[in-house]
Length: 356
Ligand SMILES: NC(=O)c1ccc[n+]([C@@H]2O[C@H](COP(=O)([O-])OP(=O)(O)OC[C@H]3O[C@@H](n4cnc5c(N)ncnc54)[C@H](O)[C@@H]3O)[C@@H](O)[C@H]2O)c1
Ligand SMILES: CC(C)[C@H](C(=O)O)[C@@H](O)C(=O)O
Ligand SMILES: [Mg+2]
Image (cartoon, rainbow, N blue to C red):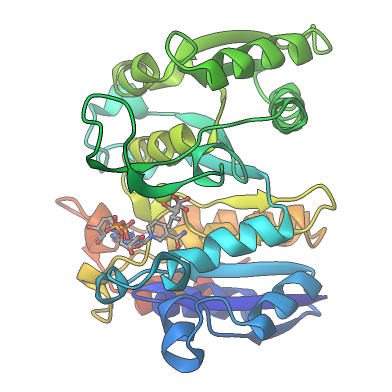
């Protein structure tokens, strides 16, 4: 079994180092090979997703990814920006199904910005479509407007689009995930305004008829954003498009205590997967040994479960994370009165020490 390890930028190398530490401590039989990606790869090779990195990722059994992006690259032409690396990997590998579980560990009930009783026991699964929508729709660009409110003015445009098969396959993923949970799916859309999302709603409804054991409801994205902070435990599986899923998953992360707690798995139709924290490269805290590595460590656990057929090892990691939280260890993002503040590396060491 081969794992491609792509640390990336900002806190990426720090948090991935801790996940690799934990994986090595499991003493399982897999090989890990690293490659540059994002701004780090641009600095080395002139491209954020070099051919060799893409090849390594495509040929590996799984990809462990840190994060990409750095403010200093924000003025580059778009194809050269670090973020193109993760978008390119998702597109080339066909990673259409993104799982972002928002689970509030009982020890972190007080770390959330919401009242403890609202988040205690929270376990939501956000399923975000990852290779379509306005992120990838063509055409896009800049031009001089020929119509609209200001003909003759400079304008920019993107294209929101979804095809029937794209919606069908992510809907099946969501219904099947719900069958293994509380059997409820909330499909989030903007059908009241957007044609793309009326179509989304229609197709999800049709697919839902094949899953009579799963209760389906629909919610507009603005209401969903509100309900997530009003009554988050009403949700079980949330399925939505690429852009709404990006936004709602960051919102949901705060229900768990911190964005540093939210792992993710991105899967394709062949069962290949890329595993990364849901957060970004956090340039504001990079290199300071303060980033929370738990989202990345929990992503490694998802990798063991979904791509490497190592359920027991995945469970060992999740139990170890629970144990370090129970010991009161906290990186600054989840620290609260009465707990012990630790750094990135110390948190990784503690997870290794807690492995049973
Ligand atoms: N998949 C990815 O690689 C990915 C995802 C999101 C953003 N980005 C990129 O990351 C860069 C920064 O973006 P941003 O600031 O909007 O989002 P971000 O997620 O990097 O950071 C947002 C805030 O959360 C904090 N944070 C994030 N991860 C943390 C962790 N593990 N522990 C503690 N605190 C953490 C940061 O310090 C920051 O205050 C941008 O270049 C963006 O494009 C990349
Ligand atoms: C970096 C960016 C392209 C990415 C996205 O928007 O998908 C990030 O925000 C994420 O959530 O993984
Ligand atoms: Mg995001």
